[in-house]
Length: 271
Image (cartoon, rainbow, N blue to C red):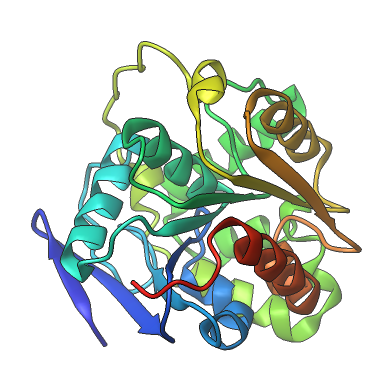
């Protein structure tokens, strides 16, 4: 099991395939097993790099350091550690926000960007969604990553799609149970950036694909619409009958969309 020692934090990663490097970033509270349906098919044409963000999966979980800047610096360290140049990034949910932070802070260092059911810094989510997140965070701070917390998390509408597939439901429950909870236990107040991602999207100058599950929550469809309006070079795609975890719920449909985009955006050039 390979680890990269990045600023004192050991980050677990896996590499498969050969060709242009594509780095996959998972969402909050889960881990790189989100991409299990992508590794084989995508690695036939590209170098697939998956990793667990700090505090998730098999990576270390420091007590602090969970701002988007910290996550993006960690990604930069992994890219340097692996010696890849101008990779493409595929980010899901929180991972989409991290990928955006890296792309906005490192112009010219990426080949393409894929944002999947992505979050968006500066976007105002509905009161009901924000309230549900705050309630879950309060429960975690009270109970830790307990059975009670995992049960409460699993009834979230974010996981409605995987609840229809018992095997996937079990996998997501396992990922949640193995989460450290560190990002929600971190009490550090991180300073706000001078400008949000929403305000800075117009400065992106690389091929971008925005993907959203057909049955994902309305807020994430609204985010996808904002991304589409504001990013200069953009394609959009909807994964039919999928929810928030579209790559896990409908891997074949998602892979077809991703491979079609990557083939046009970056081809299959070797590293």
